[in-house]
Amino acid sequence: MKRSVIRWPGLAVFGGIVALLVIVSWLFLDAILKVSMEYGLGRVNGAEVNIARVEHEWSPLTLRAYGVQATDAAKPTHNQVQLESFSADISAAELLLGRIHIEQLDVLGVRVDQPREQGEGEVYVTPSKDDVKNWASANWEQLKVSLPSTDEIVQQVGLQTDQVLADAEQKIEQQRTQFNDAKAALPDKEKIAAYQQQIKEITEGDVEGLGDVAARKKKLDQLKDAIREDKAAIELFRAQLSESAEVVKTQIARVKDAPGNDIDRIQNFFQLNETGLQNVTGLLLGDKARQWSEYLLLAYEQLAPMLARSANSQTVEKARGAGESLSFVEADAPPEFWIKNARTEVLIAGTAVNIDWQNITHQHNLLGQPTTYQARVDNSDLWNAFNLDGELSLLESGIDAKQQWQLKGANLKSLGLSESDELTASIASALLDSDGTVLVRGNQLDGEAIIRMLDLEMLAQGSSKITNAIAAALQQLNRLDINTEIAGDILSPSLSLSLNSDLDQQLGKLLGETAMAEAQGKLNEIKADLTAKVEQQLGTNTELLQNMTQLNSQAGDFNQQLEELLKSKIEDNLKDKLKDRLFGNS
Image 1 (cartoon, rainbow, N blue to C red):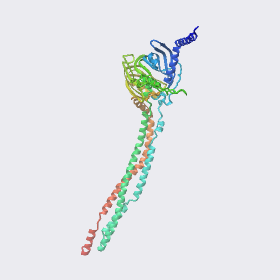
Image 2: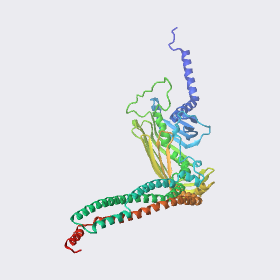
Image 3: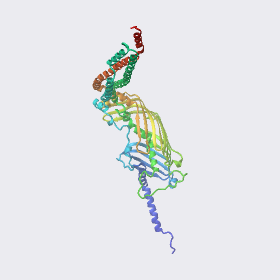
Image 4: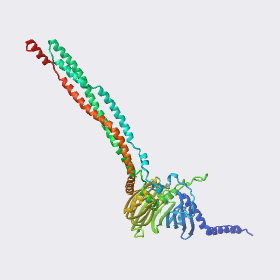
């Protein structure tokens, strides 16, 4: 009997194994897909990803997932993004070639920054401590909730009057010493009178002859030399005296201004401006701005880092001995991962915003086109009009993207802003308009926006003098314009958001007035004490300046008298007397 080539028992066993694998896969494929997706998406997200359940269909090849939650690596108690469900139509032909091409992706019920029901999620890539978010001055506990006492402010300001007095006294004392030394070297009235008497004796009296005339002339010349020396000394003294007087005047002026300058510096401190008051705009609106920005920057803060991690094998450290993965993708080949079209439904305060996407991939260099997205929602319950446009590309230089938006007539009602012990504040009603632009070049994000709140009505209540003043000012507002700036590395888990408006200036002025009213009595005492010190020094210094002025005038008179003495001549007078003696006319 001829033996059969086919071993039917072995074939039956093989068929049974294949059938068993097919049955197991058929029964447990959804569970296998769920575990695989949680693992893969978790590595891409950098933190735990949970999926409630997964379903699949073979024809057409479709994958559906429900209850997807992606943990925020920077805040594990919250989900960075969560969605009710997504459905992906996958190209079977491309899948056989090792590529994931999704013809249509629908994502429903997207929410951001939601508390995790399962507790903290596991973090695979821990963010740097330096990247922890610091949104607009943190919280109300950092606000100076009590006015410092006047003594504390005086100590912080550091009064300068005493130092000014000490410096002035040193410089004026130096001038006083120079003044007294120069004064001692000056010719006095007696010396001037002696000069006048000597000239009179030389130019008057009997003449004995021509020899006597020559002797008198020589004596007069010697006397004039002495007068010239004294005159030069007087002129030098007057020049030095003028300089000293200017120094004394300057120091006296500084001394006079010192108390007023100190009081002004104390009053400036009471203004509670840049150094005295925290950013109230940031404290009030920082948390809401953070939430709004997470929706506006959803494509950047969530999609871009995830796509970048997909292209970067260093996000999760490779296992030892795992080797390197080599890619043999041709330059003109389609991307390995490509979502051609997608629609995401983002829920904002119960309103669904549909965003249409095209060409989602991490290989834009192969596709030759950026990822684009658009959103248009008009006449909704929340706003009159909302437009959003953007595009995103992952290049060798990093992420390159741009986004712009316009929001008109958003209705804000009963919007809580602060529920701290220091201040409770909420927007009772307002109309909000906003427009802005965000650019990303080489992973660095730079954006700005303007938020305008019209028909603003606020409710606020404080628990201290400062917060009561803030609450009163807030309730008087009917409009608020806010400038926002956002910057940072798009791949880091945090971005820098800053808010500013004229609210801080308004509050600073009001609080400064309140503080000044309470401190005015103490300030008057400080000013009186400083003024008394100043007046005590001004008395002696003013007297010195008066003495300098008087002596300068007196020295000028001496100088003029010496100038007149230098004009004295004896030749003609002596010759006339000699002629009278010779010719008997005496």
